[in-house]
Length: 446
Length: 71
Image 1 (cartoon, one colour):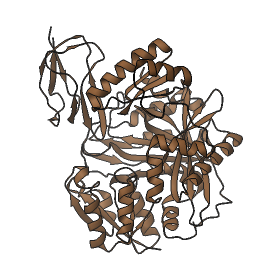
Image 2: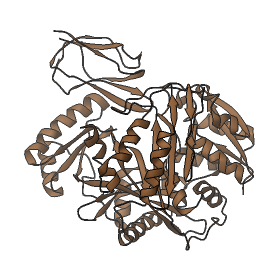
Image 3: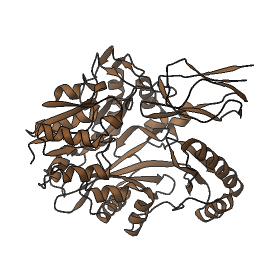
Image 4: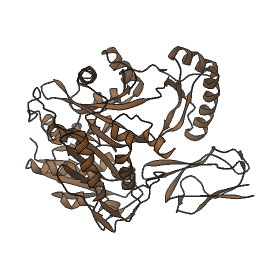
């Protein structure tokens, strides 16, 4: 195992990685931007080095600054967390070239899964179901119509350069495809400077279900069950749970097998997540993408399996045994994660500020992964995640009951905060029934 | 009647999608703000003409700042 691990990230995930690094008896080195100097992850690390100004490009995304910090601190491994450079194949390669261990999959796996179109072809060849769609931009309205006729309706017309729900439209028939193609293309050209438009099958009622995989040091790929991430706003996750209320043992076995195949297709090593769309009507699922890093919502898997995924990542990166018997993983109970964000609970608009009150809930099965404490300032430079409230119970009903108490017992003042949204969600009959889909937040906010 | 479109939060102006003099209809995107890694499109509510545009890409706006005026 290594002696010193540089944590190339910030906020709650840096703090969470530091916790495991220290528990294993290793030294944790934090890096921080000028905006983050006083945050808990900086104070809790064994050593902390400033790496630049607030803008991510000059700090957390600055590969040279990170490598220099690793050299100064005498680190022998780099854990990237999620976001920033976690899925940057170039950075992964540079870390290795500098003689350090990259705590993640190798650069080639990151690269091959990073391009959505090539990833889809790759997993399809490995026998994983994929959704139908165009593999290259459609040239004009009549080509869009021909492609849509082939894919089947309804189709999603989307700007290749889009994201966060912008530059996307659903078309139910051929005439609508031609109209939406023209509209999306004009918007994409004007907004992103890139007119490329793709088409894909649109599923009106779908759940977002993903499978956690681990590629072990001995080359085997194992699956650790699924997470349901269907509670989303603007295509970004707000709450996750494991197991998924929509997945029975048979479907789980099929999804895990597909996820393992996707990982094997790229010789995957370390932690990764295979994201799928699940059609709730038919029980069919299709590959969406693979995230080649630790996922934000990894704690729900940890609470139901008892496995520390960061420890598993470190052990695999060090070429060691994973620390548990991969053939005898037991899943127990139910876990739910709520992303406590600095955003308003109605329209989800972000609002930074100084935290004047911060009181975390306690109780059986309650875990809080927080990036901030009272007195800290939440700045506009980074994402709005304040903390992840993760709650375990022996069954889903008890997990939700405990989650309700935990939300009520979580006091945050200063920045905007979406905790009231979770109080509402946890009482919503649709959510409580378990029979919901990715449209749930849209229906709540109609 | 003139309608002032204001910023609802502290943000960077990521994209300005319209120009002064453009005719706009309800639902069109005027500008896209960026705050906390979130891109937030600011939409036209009532149709009209962009009579004034007070921001440029890269500007930082405070909550309540006027972004544009639609007549």
